[in-house]
Amino acid sequence: MDEGQRIAMIARVLSAERTDDAGIELGIGDDAAVLAAPYARGRIVWTIDEQVEGVHFRREFLSWRDVGWRSFMAAASDIAAMGAAPWCALSALVLPDDVADAALEQMVRGQGEAAAAIHAPVVGGNLSRGLVQGTLSITTTLLGTCERAVLRRGARPGDKLWIVGHVGLAAAGLRTLERRLDSEGPLAVAVAAWRAPQALIAEGRAMAAVAHAAVDVSDGLARDAGHLAEASGVCIALQEASLLEDDALVAASVAIGESALDLALGGGEDYALLASSSVTIPGFRCIGEVREGSGLVLRDARGAERPLPASGYDHFASR
Amino acid sequence: MDEGQRIAMIARVLSAERTDDAGIELGIGDDAAVLAAPYARGRIVWTIDEQVEGVHFRREFLSWRDVGWRSFMAAASDIAAMGAAPWCALSALVLPDDVADAALEQMVRGQGEAAAAIHAPVVGGNLSRGLVQGTLSITTTLLGTCERAVLRRGARPGDKLWIVGHVGLAAAGLRTLERRLDSEGPLAVAVAAWRAPQALIAEGRAMAAVAHAAVDVSDGLARDAGHLAEASGVCIALQEASLLEDDALVAASVAIGESALDLALGGGEDYALLASSSVTIPGFRCIGEVREGSGLVLRDARGAERPLPASGYDHFASR
Image (cartoon, rainbow over all chains, first blue to last red; front, side):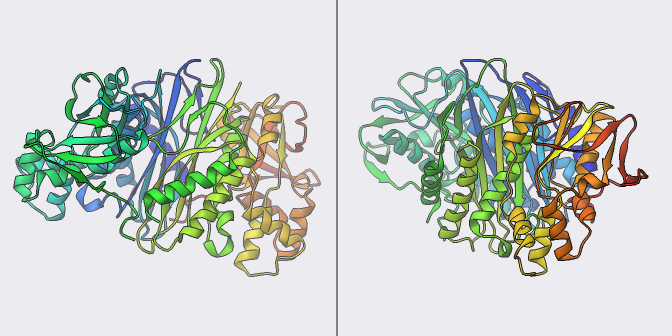
């Protein structure tokens, strides 16, 4: 297919997945998408995320639908973390020569299915040829709307720290694939967590009413809790026992022979939501508390505390 | 620098360039940017563009500031083509290992200068490590606002076709660099057109009041005029003599020994604006007319007409 044919195919696949057209006046096919401004007093949140082959994913571990789905959900998780409702999305694809038309169609189908799952239709994008033997990349930008955005700053001493979703499970899934382990039982759950993550949109909306601050956990709990602590100018104390109250994580960690705690603190790509609130957040579980000070501490079952380095995934740390 | 340090540096460089904060409640540093919805009855336009090293640019032909500037302007041109005012932008960078911190800073400075030039501050983004010896890419997504967006569809038989900006000049500049010609005199102008294009924002705003349809000319006049004709369901007749009424283009074409007409019809990356209107558009010049029918025709000085293939740049045509 030439560029025009590919764009037409993409528009056809994505329009089949569309479930919600609120405020969308013009979608794929012009120089830009056209939207009606949502409402006069509301807030718009806006994020962009790029997934690069060989850095964020390896084709051999994913179906083409997975590649599309997970790239979309990774971006959508930022909308969830702001407590916003997704509105719509644009996608920019860099396609090396070895991506066949059928593979592209499956990848776009995965994007469209993820978009439909969170009611954020893809209303435009950009298609670039990659280099011969170049790397595939998928960029997703999403708009969301809300009455009030939940920021990383705003956590207050005295708040409890709340989480929804797994942390560490996706990392266990990736380890399973990298080591070519049998992905059955608990490891099947872990592999699915890595391959097909879910942006926790409804949970983010529930949180928005009461949370003082929030972040999504994409780079490991220690790192993202560290972001929350730093942005808010507080100390965060995590309860070790609470982090291990995740049967799926514990079972997967046993099966791969790694520490569940290390996976939770250092493993990324789960897209859990971490929030600070003085009251219970429905559906979330409490894993710690917010104090005066700075940095992170981990409190073990006997009440002993130790400082925790903000580990996790730093794209440039290995330089 | 690690990822956090690079993000801090980028935020610092970009904040120095910021000139306009209308409606921007939260910029770089959280999970998403937060904007105040612009106004209840307005339209939001939204575009994304990605520039990939080796496909859209070669580092050897550009300074790092040029790389940043032109990637931003390429995206902004789509906002101009909708007749909209730029609002703000996000940027996603994929940085291979051989991009030094100082080079990154210069590139971001170029983005920031372009953003300041059109009053569209960069309010967030994403930073990804590229592969070792991988390719650099810069993705820019822009929001704009307008009362009414000018689409590609809407050109009416009887309209005149209007253009502002050069077409073919940037292609002459790229040829100059590729052939390592002396870039003096007319070729200096051409090289500058390729290296540092300008999104024609003010011209787009002027056009919005009267244009029935518009497109920016990024892939060559024949191809983009073809897009306008196809989207509007009309035939577009271009006047050959009018296309040659561009002294800079003619001088550059003579200096590189190529046909000015071929450059205008097939050369991309000028970011002129092409519009259809029944009345004069201030600052634009008339280069043809809109008729019943379909496709493109070229009318020579004696009035003879020939059909014109929609040539120009197709990212996937060479497959």
